[in-house]
Amino acid sequence: MRSDNLGFFLAEAFKNLRLNLLMSATAVTTTAVCILILGIGLLVDAHVEGIVRNVGQDVAITAFFPEDVDQERIDEVITSVEGYPEVNESAYVSKEEALERFRETFADQPDIARSISSDVLPASMEIQLKDSSDSSVVADRLREEGFQDDEIRYPQQTVDRLNQITGYLIWGLRGATALFLVASVLLIFNTIRLSIFARRKEIEVMKLVGASDSFVRTPFVLEGLVQGLIGAVPAALLVVWMDSLFVGWAQQNLPFLPISS
Image 1 (cartoon, one colour):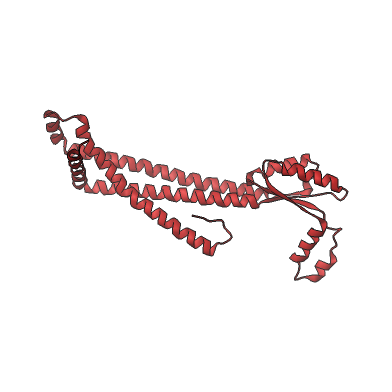
Image 2 (image 1 turned 60 degrees about the vertical axis):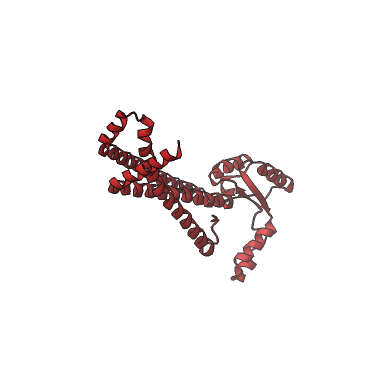
């Protein structure tokens, strides 16, 4: 494409935008809203997945060892559990460590702390998962290792609820983005059709003097491209700015959540 042709095509594209200003403004606004929702959806998806992943790693399954189990069996079970692909890490908590934790928890109630001995609290194993959704799988494997149902503790209901809510939220944002994307494409398409209809006589003359289809089509293609860029670029910059503000606010006010840019 020669530079003089490019200048002509751009001039024609902006001329079409001026002639159909209202429709062009509507298409640009819809495109901006579409990109804004898409960007917000991507940000929410990324941040929520990061939080869920972090929460999933913090969700621990606690397995309590029976009183009559020996240390050899405990070491064997720990080695076996650490080999599970769903397990991020595991830690053995002896009776003495369990008693120490209990006393720290009830430090403001010394009578309760002194009334408990290490023989009362069982030894246990705390298992952190790579993915919170694997808690049921790991629990089933622990049962195969010999643990009873009352010796396994894990917040399955909370985990399932968290995964369900996250899935609904993300799919809702994706659905809204798809609807606005379709609306944006249709509006730009209709705007270009109106431009073609308004200049149909001029196009007929151009065809009569030998203009090719690509020569006639290019200004309208550029018109749609310009409309998309005018709507998309400010919306994308707004999304980046909003993300920066949110990350800064979250890191300052929600330090317990793993929010990063």
